[in-house]
Figure 1 (tube, one colour):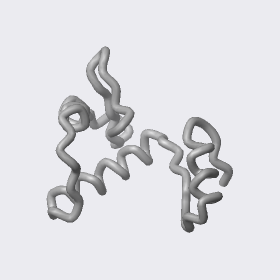
Figure 2 (cartoon, rainbow, N blue to C red):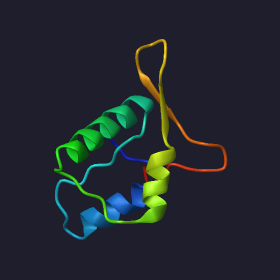
Figure 3 (tube, rainbow, N blue to C red):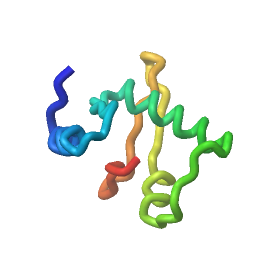
Figure 4 (cartoon, helix red, strand yellow):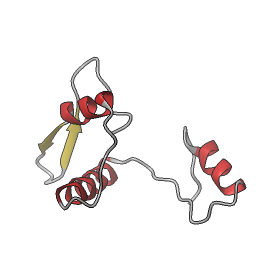
Length: 86
């Protein structure tokens, strides 16, 4: 699958630097749900730790989720904020 968008040049740079198994991620709502679920599970099992970064912690704490009619989880954040690092 071809990777396009903001991260495309980063992936190419990593491949050119000899880093193996580089794969881009297309952030659909379904993929975001999958990644957030794995992140939460790893953190609960103490298998993944974040550096103490107040801005990152704030961003994670303002992220909201809602179960929608389709059975999927929809993520959102407060107006004026962003979820770029989440």
